[in-house]
Each structure stands twice: as C-alpha cells, then as structure tokens.
Length: 314
Image (cartoon, rainbow, N blue to C red; front, side):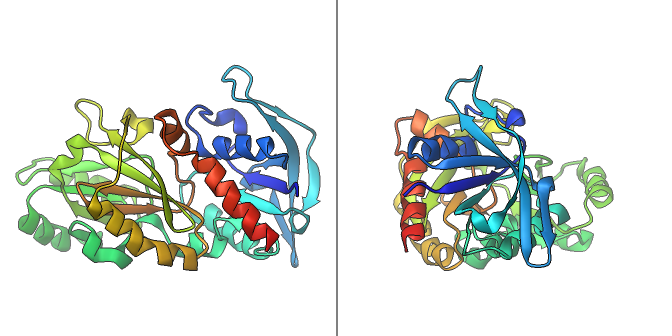
C-alpha cells in the first residue's frame, strides 16, 4: 500500500545528493510508489497535541543537474502522515531537541524514523559509552586536571567536541605537544559542554569503518581512509571510501549493539570502528548508504524501506 512520507531535513537545495543518505531513501520511496513531502525543521508547529508542518510535495531524480522539484507548501497535520524520516544534520542542539519533543507527540501512530525520544536520549558520543568495553580509553570532561592525567597515562590523545559532527574540531595531541594549552583554552571558550578525550589510535591511517545497521542487523560497510595529511576520515573532509567486509571483531560489535538498537526503535544507525574499536554510534542522520551502493555493496535504502513497510503493515 502506498504511504504518505514526509522527510524532515535540511533544505533539499543545500544537500550533496550524490552522497546524501536521505536522498537515497527518498529515491527508493518514490520508486516504490510512496508519496513524498519535504519540509525543514523550522516549519514544525505544535498547538496542544496537534503537530503540523508546511509540507511541500517533492519529486526526486538521480540527476545532479536537476535532482528535485518542489510543489506549493500546504499546512498539514502530521498525524495524517504515515512515515516521517527525521534526517536533518546535526548540530544536536536545543533546536534539534525541541523537534524530537514535537515529533514524539505523534509517534508511533505516525512512524518517525528514528524514534525521536531515543534520538534525544542517545547522543552519539554518549550513547556509545554504554558499551565502554568495546571502545578505546575514553574520557568525557572539560576539567583540565582530568585531561592532564588521561594524557599522562595514554600519551597521544584526540580531543573533540561532545556534540560535534562531520569531523569538525577534531584534534590529535601528542605527548609533548606545545599547542595543548592553547587548544584547551580554545575548547574552553568555544564549547560549554564537556568534551570527548580518547586515546589516539594510530591505525586510523588505514581507515575509519562506517558500518550501517538496519533494525539492529548489519546491512553494509564502507572504509573511509583519511586524505594525506589529515587525521579525519569523514567523507565531507576528504576521506576516500573503500570497499570493506567485516572482521570477526566488528561482527561481535554489531551483535552486541543490535538488541539495544531494536529496543530503542533506532531503525537506521551508523557506527564508526577504528582498528576494532567502537568510537561512535550515529543515530541522527547517519551517512554511507550511497557510498556502500557505489562500491557494489548491498542496497541499504531498500532494506530500510522493507523494514518500514513491514512495521506499517503491523
């Protein structure tokens, strides 16, 4: 049965459609005959228990020169929509949190993917600490003495903002790095929340593997290799995608995470693994669907829609 599908996202005109997972999901939905709508988070409104948004009908095409057409916006009660894909990019800020509260009002009658309460309660660099034995040594703090002690114990470390995304403000600090004090001051002035301090994993040079799970099951993977002279492997920062299979250790990680993801209604999740160590669980708008497909891997967009359709069918 055709579904009415609304996609809450950054404006479609701003995305890189060639690598955008939301766009891949939209293409697959349209292919299956579902009716697609587009809206940005600032168009949400809540009046009592009624949540509305000004939705624009959208047609999508896999053509970088002409990839979408929008219709006229219509104010719509989101309880009348079958599925909402919550796919705007972080930052995971108060605006993002407010949107999860609004969408929680209509879920699960309207199926929101991912579950908005679970997205709110599973910040990507904090949720992962529930699986601390799978992670490299990790400290969450902004206290200088704690960071000093952690650095003295582990030597080279990585500092990054707790709610950062896309590889922004990720720094490697060596054991005798003279920039450490200045970097600490910069973080203290820039970020009010605690920061993530992790032991540096030198095998990052061989790649940071993005593994996608659909309803708690392994769906596909891509190894992202940093560009020369850069610590960060994110594809938006120049990381190069490489075909990849899972190691036994990575399969163990997926098996450990699967039940927790299903329990929380986190239908599409991307995890990051470096040299067998779990570093992040991405639940907001995980990328990698199109990269996996371009490397000859599974059609993860189809897997996602198979799962959504089965859930809507009851």
